[in-house]
Image 1 (cartoon, rainbow, N blue to C red):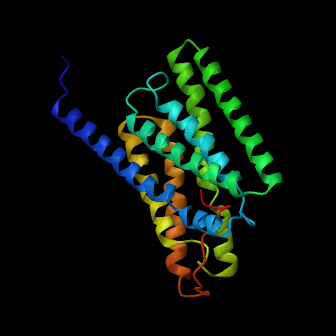
Image 2 (image 1 turned 90 degrees about the vertical axis):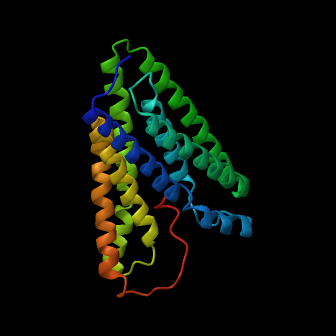
Length: 236
């Protein structure tokens, strides 16, 4: 039996602690659209809201989940759990959106979801054709990193809106805080696991989270503070 030395044991504990924290903070992000869907269910209409962010978020969760499996990378259990949880939430949101959308949106969403399933199947089957484990990890890691960075970049619209309107009306504090805490947790998790495909995109997420918090503190007393639901197009 291989026993870890004291430093290795501490590193493993810290890594797992960071992963658990990341899962907890990610839960805060995943439940954030609930208020929007309460409105959709109450009005029995998706109104002006877009379902595209949920479709894209689901693909991101699937690819990152696949990257976290032992078939692709080693010792990334926390990556699997957080993305499995995210996949469930995004699927529920997509199903609810399809139920309450008009016919044109229903057809479009169903088509996008089917295309996403096919694309993910191609990625899984294609990556399994790469017999070199390191090359397979790089292939899936690059894909997961690209989708994750683009997800983190989505609040750039909100950041621009805050600066332009000098108001934090559409940038809820707790959502920005959850983004920052989740990103820095998985940044530390990736560093402690020596996995660039985890710590690099999450370092970008950490910087964007800090930016949102700084802007919130700066502009919170400047603009109108009417209570509205967050923009579904920007947070998912």
